Image (cartoon, rainbow, N blue to C red; front, top):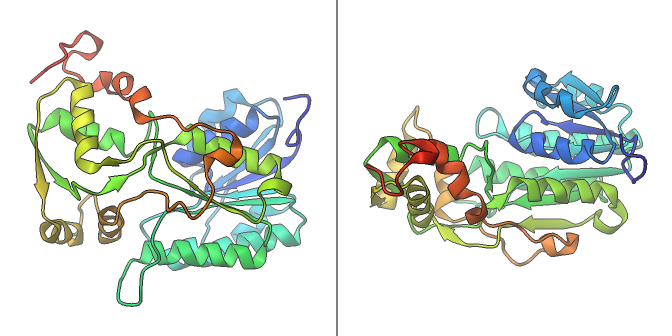
Length: 316
């Protein structure tokens, strides 16, 4: 455990901490000497972090974010709380709208000194639009601010990492299929490296006096269209592929079908793009220079090449 630092020995509770981002946030906090309680539906999913922790530094708790009693049990005794709960399934209004307010209120009432709420870059739907995910995210932010005015709100763009569900999904499809449809081909994304987002969260907890009560939007250094991202992945795999831009009308029909990998909410978010609005501060307030996708892509796509690291640069 670290010998000094604002988080040394402090108990930080990661709500929904068993997922992709939670893994990186946990590593950033463990290295700072924080004690962690990782809460989620399947706490065993975070057991891989055990070798990184000292004796007594890591706890695990089963938690249902839709159950207020469960939320309260997890937060008891916390010095700081991070809400990482996010989903495209279930009762989104309750999970990502009302539950963050419960978390913030309980954290405030039990003496937590800081609270970080991870939201998302998503335009608030107008009255005629139906996007339950975006509506829930915006409600969650309001509820957190009402209950814990000094909370830090973090809105990352789509995150990428070695073990993400974004690059790896497209990497798998591109490796298998010679012709692929591209939904929202002109939609711009500002992909952000997951480790950079985790560092922002850790620094927010270290210095709530500087970052409390503020909202940050976090995007990577490049704005890439979906078509450009697909082509970059194919190039990194050394594969020649044909990409077919899909019209919005067909994309919407596909997203509405049951069992597809992209639901209607996800399609509506993709269609509008996912880039920072420039209305809020970002990485510059933390002294962090976000890392570009190109720094990692060639290395991460090696396993998708026909002959791995021994592959020709252009494969079938």
